[in-house]
Image: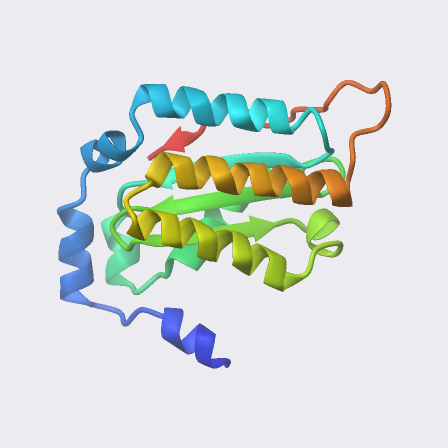
Length: 179
């Protein structure tokens, strides 16, 4: 197990983390990402997907289910679960990308399916998350996500450009999911 993997693991029965998730309501996420912001993020995803063959799904979660927190599940584990559950893992070319934000844990996870992940270095994904995290620290939440989506558009356009003359597949909704 790498040092990074050890650092991101949570202990089961972490009471302070459980209380943090208990006290972080969907209203917190709505305050950071109001409807107008969600509209802008949706438009950015829709416009982005015209230039490439990837499917981008944005999930903003105020707090994980308390049972999962109590068992010590990480945000990475939650993101992988949502990646599968929301169908991001089932796109035709295996080019789904999930951008997951957890408000309670102040965590961002980026999961890319093997069709796109094989063409992009892990460092590139890490850079997207690091820039977004820096923006969050500066309390530039919506702009940081918009910047990340623009970067993902550029990465996807370079790795998997849209087929000339073909309409985008758009197998997944472009609307950010607030949970």
